[in-house]
Amino acid sequence: MRATIYVTDDDQSVCSALSRRLAKKGHLVRSFHSGESLLEAVGYEIPDLLFLDLKMPEMDGLETLRRVRQSIPTTLVVMLTAYGGVEDAVEAMRLGAYDFLIKSVDFSSVEPALNRALNFLTLRRRVEYTASEKQREFSWNHVIAISPSMTAVLERFKRMAAEDTALAFLHGEVGTGKEFLARVLHYNSQQHLGPFVTVICTNQNVPRLESQLFGYERGAFSGANQAMPGMFEHADGGTLFIDEIEHLPIPVQERLAEAIRTRSFCRTGGKDCLPINTRLMLASAIPPDHPGNESTFHPALLLLLQNHQIRIPPLRERKEDILPLALKTIQTYGEEIGRPKIDIDASVTLLLENYEFPGNIRELEALIKKAVLGSQGPILSSMNFQLENAHDVREDTSQNKVHIQFELGRHSLSEIQSIVIHEVLRLAKQDKEEAARYLHISPQMLEEQM
Image 1 (cartoon, rainbow, N blue to C red):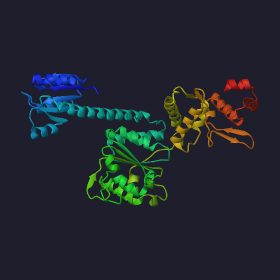
Image 2: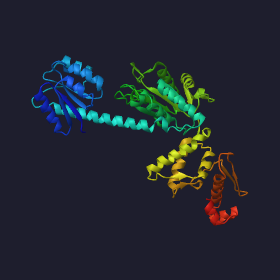
Image 3: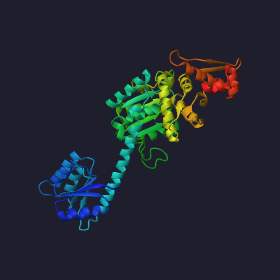
Image 4: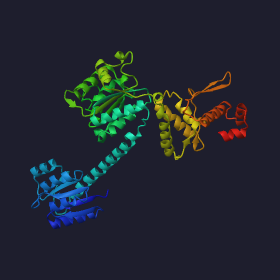
């Protein structure tokens, strides 16, 4: 990478030689001969890397470092000295120096230090870019919440992000978006720079699930030839999302409840307690008040779930969100496959709003993607969707009848007419002449009304 590097040394010959060496490698280099001139410069530009002499008149390197860290905390600082001193090195590191080098005639130690610093800067930029991308992907604006039930959930999540709540239990039917909402909370809270670690209990080897969560020490069980950290440690400083906890063995649930209560845990086979510095989010399709939960959850964990629960409503309870979710999926998926200008007609709106969606958002997204892939033109109609359990249109094949349900005042006559035509076409197996005969109109008029 090409970096902006400042070199500060009161010895002008050293400063010039080091600056030339760095500039030859393609970096933008500026040189200064005092701590005062350096501090003035960083008020206008922030360097990526700073080489700073330890011994300078008036303001020495340590005092300069102390002030630099206050004004430009992200800049990496490499301290330079003509002779080694353990106390100075320790103090420099305590003040936030990245590296500490002994100056040599040929600057042989500078290049390895430079490479280490540039590798660190490259990695940090990648992490920062990924974090910023995730924050955009999981911003509050990406949560569709027009319905009252979902608006209340979103407001609850925003309060949790502001209050830095350590525990939450999300319960809702399969496909309601529990993990997505957990990620939204993570990337809009203080934990956003930490990792988001997911554990799905049904995907784990049950006998090893306990050690995967809590880690284990060497010799804890057969095959444990070395100590290994668990998910709690991997999620340190971030969020640990444990999904489908109803499949977590009861003894492990008891241990999890104790870890939540004490905010600490021990590795399997270990005795030393480790603090938990993690937001813990548990999720399940089973609500805490479901009959028979006494056999599904350990009593201590069940009590915690009841006190920290958030119900995610199914899609059938948030009808106002269906169309915005559908349009968002159409736009996102259309852009992915190179068809960004796909739209829907009124028949699709009526069809989707009156469908029960037993698979919730996950099913809606799958239906949209399938319809987009199967479509030819830029407009999706009800013919692109196959909803066997749709409530908006129900067919009595024995009497060759079609019944349509719609909410008064919500749809126009033309919208209702469109859905009728497309349903008759479906019954006629897309034979327009037969459909026109059913409707007592000409095929030409059928084409005009579609």
